[in-house]
Image (cartoon, rainbow, N blue to C red; front, side, top):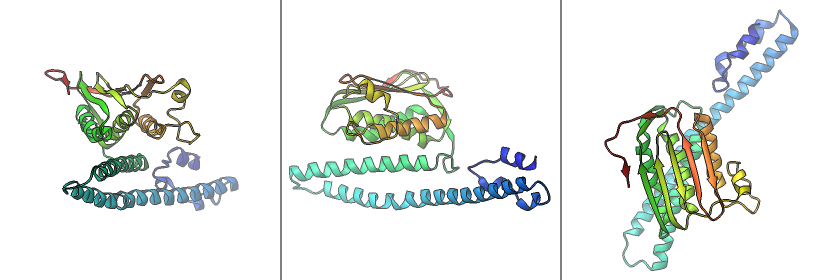
Length: 273
């Protein structure tokens, strides 16, 4: 009974908290003692794994960002140089755009690595602020495309959650729209309890749409969109934010991210940028 109680109360994210002492069961049932030893060994291995994961997250956060910062600074210095050829300017634009892409991916993967860690504090924040920040963050991805990126805020609402996590999810939806829209428009709309991202891009046929949220596996038919959507689904499921996708080949894509715990915030007038 004691071992059963320990296992019921065991939290895999804190495996050391309820680690049983096999000596406590030494004078009882032999099978129970064996189970206690096995459970303790499992808990020790999980504790080591959790510690390695935390160390990796901490180290990666620093080690991966440092070279990117150097590249960003160097690119900014080059951008101020006069006399750059048109080819050099285009190359510099691609470098700066790629750095932003890598930064976004690093941030996303670090959030995923720490999704159960206390390093992601929850707080109250306005979803509208996150949406505007992420739109501006990814606007440069459009480059010289004939695409209008707009924000409409018909509602205002707040959430109690880790803001970084919310930014990663919304940012990935905006990023996908920017990368897969060559002309037309992208509309990011804040509604009553959701954020809707609609584009006039390539779209997806029924087969691609069916596997859109699956983890990326190259099969010669993927367009690079699925890694972002798989991440969105994983994080959204973790925080209870249902995500829906509608698309048709050649007619664009609509992604809808719902927030059931949204808290309405009064606004004087709807806003559109």
